[in-house]
Length: 125
Image: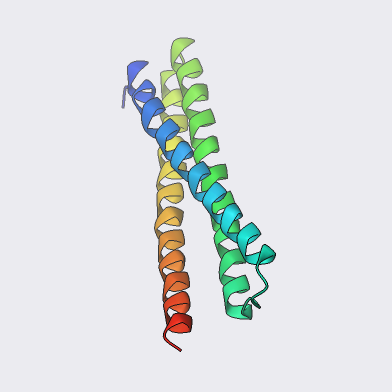
């Protein structure tokens, strides 16, 4: 398979926007945790477990996204220097990391929904 230099470059805006979205999720979660710790209300163990899970998943999402971005750049370097086969393999790895990051994003969204359900259950008491 032959890919040109512009093929991995097409992923740059998409990966950048994903990383921005992941960073926003992280900041929202950090603000929520700080808000919970400043309240006088006790925090349930189930909520703390949920928040810890989400932090870990968001970190993995960001790591996979940044790694995908770095491999995209490395792929472009290899293609630019004439190592098209190696560049293609690295591009494939970049796509796999991007897919992993997206799957983690879906998992984190599901956990977030579970957290909202815990909160709603608490409000209905």
